[in-house]
Length: 509
Ligand SMILES: Cc1cc2nc3c(=O)[nH]c(=O)nc-3n(C[C@H](O)[C@H](O)[C@H](O)COP(=O)(O)OP(=O)(O)OC[C@H]3O[C@@H](n4cnc5c(N)ncnc54)[C@H](O)[C@@H]3O)c2cc1C
Image (cartoon, rainbow, N blue to C red):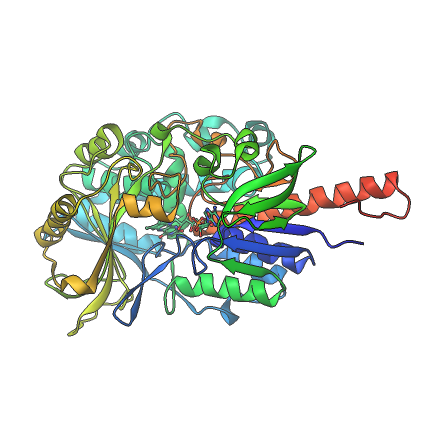
């Protein structure tokens, strides 16, 4: 019997997870990646001789990878070294106002009690219980399902009624019911940004992200990029080919079915199925040809999720006891998101995330310059707005100003810092404007509008952070696995129907 050929577009988390699953099943898998390295958004920037994780830094839902590796007869620990964090993140509003969040709920409750009072500590307990309930209700019928389906959700066994997942209330409003202290509303509202969304527009359903984080955050020794490298290495070991520096320009069809992909240099790679992990917005814009456009519903520019402006740097940090993950809040979250979501402009005072990659969750004094990844949210306008040096400099001043206000001063040299703007993200991930999480999760229907693995075009499948079940490293891996499962199912069923039609089961392709 002919071995079925699958082309996977993109060697990011989703593409590599899909390739691994398919190669392990004996399919002929070619991953085509336009960048020179694996990882996609899980990328590493070199400053001098030091690599800095400059994409995802918070590793959660490790069970997704445990399952993926177990399916291959492997264990995750044999490929990357993980360490759970006791302190999830340190949050600061000024030099005197700081709050740590712990993996242990009781410790977080105590910390919140000291910070905001007893009532908010109890509010936190209720918040955790409700966030867990939302995750538990959605895990199997929605998150782990190959496509978003309201019907499947309503029919699922644990589902009582829609209000249990809080779809009709904004996250910000719901948080006001748990916390009287607006700083806590801001801290927990920030979880909406993990999906590139505004807490003022996203449904309270996204509280589940807080649950995911409190269920465990792990540090990957050597950086998150090690995970991408491990996935790519294992995919090759299992027989997949990865072609770096090769760009797919077209999905080619014959008789209304996928037959090949065409590369930008004219090469054609035949395929019985194609899994595209580029942003669905890019597919809808025609970056993979007309047939693919018809197959996939994109989303309008107004629905794009957030982009970011980031600084990967080696700097001497003073005045603030940095941990691995640190958040420095703006003084007015509503004004910040009014700029980001409504005016589509850089905020005058951003909230700043700092990942201190030479630190863990214990207080450490570092006498030498350390590796930092600094991120602020930005509107996804990278395809129609050029971030000129003066504007980037203004953003840097505002960003580093927030850090100074909270007591952190950074000393670095220009050659020790690399900035990435939404324009750069649009260049790295074309057709997105720099949006990093697909469509935003604004409004209660948004999560149902992400496409599932199957498309209208036979043989074309979608996966990745812009497809169902959504953005984030584990979610992208889940989508890759689900797309691979759909490919296997469909190729098996066409093989069966051909066998029935043609005794002897000869493939016609
Ligand atoms: C700055 C930043 C911080 C983040 N923080 C976190 C975090 O802390 N935790 C977390 O879980 N998630 C985080 N995320 C989100 C997470 O990184 C993504 O959701 C996830 O990595 C997406 O993986 P993917 O495989 O879907 O897409 P991608 O990683 O974008 O992979 C798609 C790949 O397709 C390739 N490609 C596109 N078009 C073509 C073409 N025409 N031909 C060939 N190849 C093509 C691209 O080059 C890319 O490598 C963050 C993202 C960013 C950018």
